[in-house]
Length: 534
Image (tube, rainbow, N blue to C red):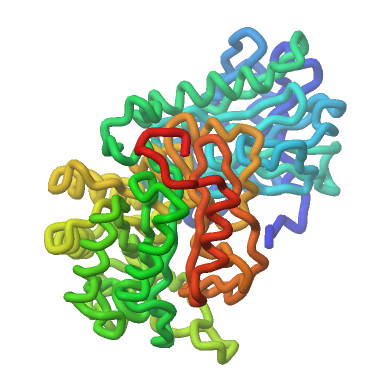
């Protein structure tokens, strides 16, 4: 749901120099209220770049500080540089654009993660960071907007035609990180480009944006990444073996998994296959964030047999961990690490699936922030213990690309600290995340595709040039469509596909494995020497 004002904010709109009718306005939002620029200031001095404030609706001027706004022209682009000083802490700043070329906007909006061949028409709202906006760039025809900043912060692109407006308005909203709310704020530069001289202008602008962001976040190309073990560069397939459901239902014991892998080895090249183990630690999510082999699946001895057997065949093994999830009843210190709302007044209770089928969400699942030192240490120790005891090759982090504006511990910095500490202890460990966005590709060289995102996106190179992706845990298994330990139940299975930079997945959630072996043969993954085309 996207809420909106029920009145005209009556912002003063300022012509964009050489903008052919384009005008702009700025709104400022504090922890107490919303403000527009004072229109009287502009009337008094139309050349000034400094503005006072008025309440939204322009009914009353307030003596609360000032905004300094400079617009710099660079070829076919304008960059807005906004600084705000206010007596109240500022939590967000909005730039509004009117009068953009209607013919270009009518072509619809797209970003790198928009499904290829499609565009979105307003009203639309995309939020960074997340699956709808994986990098802060978007275009409609020859019009593009972007933010090139090394700071991970919430950003919204909102496009609509309000009844009080003059057609389509484009809003770019910068949310000040909650840990940095202040009475003085500098907004990351906002760039508007309009090119009329080339059909591929938007694509070229996207290329420049992506290069700038990779430099800002320190993202290396796939072939140059120092955090990819040599064996991982040859991976060709992921095999998912579901363990124990939240309810305690067992899909496969560790010995079952070992048998299935031995049988599958006739149809795949194990040396190019990553074995993914969700629900290995016991009741999936119920036992989060405590990780040790489930007694009901075979315990310590069974897990050792599984890993040793898989490794002897050439497979690589990746157990699943939760970057955020925890059962409050199993982790008494949860309140210290629980993600807080931006004003730090209460913990945010997130992600409460109905695990047991009674049509009500479970009440004890909480999301914790790995930026909190004690929880991060808990995760690092859990992964390290598993690597050292069982010689596993990789660690998957559930929900690692979820982002929340926690004022106590910036979440991205928590993810950065988590991955840095793990690589220091285990330099050859492959780290994999659920989901991705531009800055996260700097931390995780492999990820599952976001749930609901089409694989065939407009600009797959945004991720595949620098990382690898796999299908999501919730994709259904062959024939039955069971999602195993995941809460989706049953989903129509899609045949695994081979795409550049993307590893297909074959999942097991019960059955004799015949369907999985048939799927492997369809992928033409016959046994072949490591490093071959498979």
